[in-house]
Image (cartoon, rainbow, N blue to C red; front, side, top):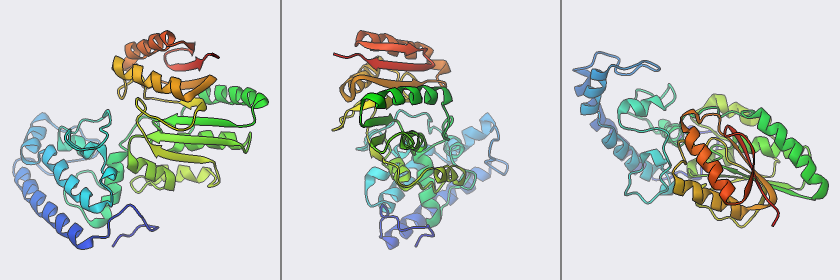
Length: 333
């Protein structure tokens, strides 16, 4: 059925129903595409090409993105064993799923194609082999700096603090909020593996499909980043689970928490959200522990990041660094 390198347990085995739904989608959207092609000179889509306003208007008329997303959602419901794996970008407000604070607005089919890899951008018809890369790409849209070694200054400081911590403690626990497909989380685990065998690193992200990709170190949609996983041992004490950074409840508490590129920025910036986020940090951070927040992609959100600092001070955190490279310390009670 699928030309994937391993048995993928999250997929449904209902081949006949999936093929029927794919045929319906492909037939219906080919008709839409043919109508749009009468008014737009080929090709309708070119990667990294700036499309004209009139082209976008015609495409929105004949290739409505909301209906396209709905059609893909129908396929996804058959494709996955569990509907929770449907990417949030395909979910509507009435769906029972955790809607992410989207960095991308799928208002147009062009917006949809823009976040897909070149092999899928511009397509409206799909084969069965296209589906897993397609849905993984939608669960893991392009972000700024998703490779390891993104925050060298932060890592240097973490090494210093972790070394000091391990002089007085026999074990260390770390939480990575908004971990995505887990490369940064594995980087943290790899750095601790060199210091002690008594450590635990956990990653938390909203997308169940990202948790699956991180756990299996498998990116069907991105062969380039897939190679980054090779630098990390399979024996690292590192695990991943689904959770919301502003509303999570874990059994463990942590000595260090990381939340890079999330709090104060486009994903989490409303005052009520920031307050809930800080409440979660306070509950899960051990006394004397640190929360790292690198905000180097928050140029348009300096005010909300500075609001986060104000709220953190009011909650009793000790503040180190600047709004771009922030460190919160929970004071000993």
